[in-house]
Amino acid sequence: MKTINAAGRELSLYGEGGPLILLLGGGEAGDAIWSETKKRTAAPLTLALLPVEDWDGALSPWPAEKIFRGGRDFSGGAGETLSFLERELLPALTESLGRAGEAPWLAGYSLAGLFALWALFESDSFAGALSASGSLWYPGFADYAARPFRPRAFTSPWEIRKAAPATPLWQEWRKTPGPSSPAVSPRASPPAST
Image 1 (cartoon, rainbow, N blue to C red):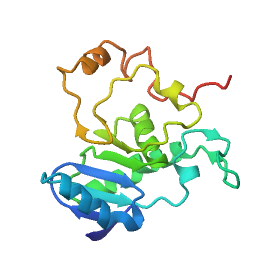
Image 2: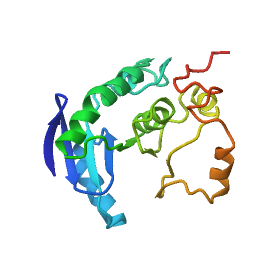
Image 3: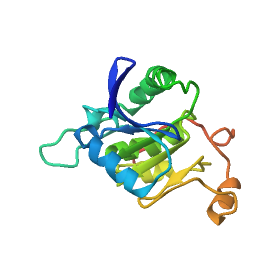
C-alpha cells in the first residue's frame, strides 16, 4: 500500500495495472479489503481508497429524513461530491497514475454503494459501479432507478461482470432509451414525493 495525494485529498493505493477502482470509504479496512480482493482474483487491478467523512451528507443523492433515532437527516450533497470527483479528483488521480483520461470503476459499501449506482445515472465518467450492500432502501431511489437506463456495466455482491450483449437482460436494456436519448434526462431530479 502506498499513499498518494490527488486534488488535495489523501488516497490509499493498492496494486497496479488493470482496471482502476475508486472505492469511497474503506479507510482503516483498506488492507483487509485488498487482501480479500486478491484472494478472489489474480487479475491485475488498481484500488484507490478515498476517505469520506460525512457519509449522510456527501453521499446522499437528495435530502431525506433520518432513519435512525438520534441520527441526522440526509442533506443530499451527492451532486457536490460527484462534481468534485469529475472536475478535480479523477483528473488529478488518473494523471498521477499515468492513466489520464481513463474512466475508473466507482465502488462503495452501504451509502457509498448507493452513491456509486446513482453516479452511473448522473455521469459518464465511470466505467461501471460496484455496490456492496448498497443502501437501495434510500427514500425515492427505487422510483428513481426504475427509469430507463442503459448501463455500461453492473455488479452483484458475488462477482464483477461486464454486461455481455448476449445476455437477455442486456438485450432488454438495449431496447430502452439510454441517458443520451431525448426521452431521458441524464441529470434527472429525484422523484416527487407523494
